[in-house]
Image: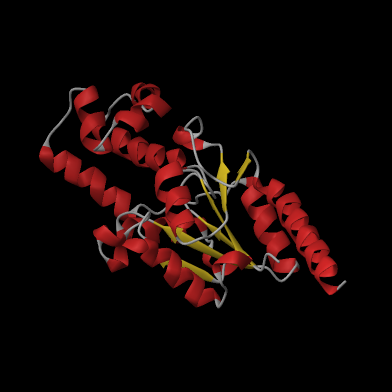
Length: 228
């Protein structure tokens, strides 16, 4: 029986592009830059290829300087905006709360930035636990088992009683699989067309309800057969 749902954060529960674009909008306003040009550059392909988004954006508009890169990074850690959850994220978190299903988030990334995103999203009140993998050290971020194991411990659940949902086939799906956690790949964000090895694939978080119900029915049928 599914007793818990563990989510990735970026591009699983909200559109991370909105966070970056607001940073670029404020930066563009300060330096009288063409924000629409930056918006056009900031595509899924750009996200996939970039190893340092702020440096690559600045170089793309011929405005690079190390201090400007540091300024963008500072905004990344501290910007104060209202960041909306995906509609289906709000719906599945509400469903989980109403049905006694525990919820958690396991997220990689710069610690201050991830905590700032959580604050901007106002999501803490909707979940039982948030694991910031970088707190253990960069080498222990997903797909390392440690953040998943910590999350299971905080929820008080075993690996077979939860589902892990994420948009990244490597960090999210392969990492959870190493911990024997059933996985759900959600196709959205800049990795939506990537191949994956998840147990399930969805396009909307509300599809989790059918997966939960199907799994619970199969478990009941199995236990019923065992009694005869």
